[in-house]
Image (cartoon, protein in one colour):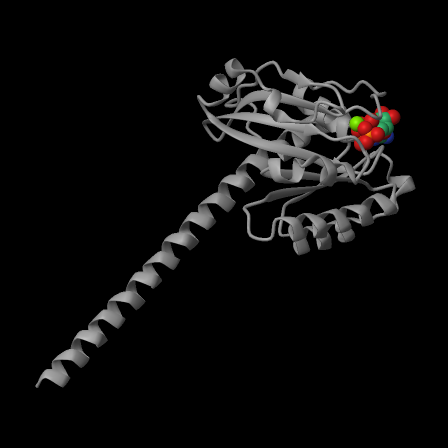
Length: 241
Ligand SMILES: Nc1nc2c(ncn2[C@@H]2O[C@H](COP(=O)(O)OP(=O)(O)OP(=O)(O)O)[C@@H](O)[C@H]2O)c(=O)[nH]1
Ligand SMILES: [Mg+2]
């Protein structure tokens, strides 16, 4: 749950604001050194144009809702915070709404967690998320990827085209938490903060699962190897006697 008392927020730092400078290799050494002092999590905010990706990101980073955001630029922010008592350095890439963008620019490979945003007032934006997720998994079938599904603009319920059940079902299919929120509604700021933090938690959980899985797989491998060695030595003894 959201724990505003125990959470420290730092001023967000914008790293770039240009569609042409998409490579994160442009980070300075100073920035690299700083981010290496605590766990870093790379998050990409994805979704169709106009669903509120920038509004949500800006809400999370500054608690403000500006209303109009540049529709075509893409920005990466670095933000230090604490999630469940651990310091985390978040790098958040707010993509431009051109869905093909992520595949062109390689953010898919860069990101560890995805915040998948659609608007509850736009059915097409929901269907685009389904497609994006399929493409993402096809591109990174075996890597650890955390996701959070977000249906934004729930202040516009009268124009709803995507039900909460639709969102639940898609989240189940993806295997991720689901939030219906409004970046515009000031009452929902805690929920917006929570969903970004949950991206970090999800990633931690996935990493842990992966470690457990690989350790039990290596234990299994060792047991099989021990058994085969035992069987071979028994066969040698039998043939010698
Ligand atoms: N009513 C309402 N409007 C919102 C909400 N979130 C964003 N908007 C508005 O929707 C429009 C698009 O928001 P953006 O945050 O620019 O959307 P985006 O997904 O970043 O769009 P691109 O950058 O073009 O991909 C703006 O006019 C916002 O004010 C919300 O929760 N409710
Ligand atoms: Mg935007």
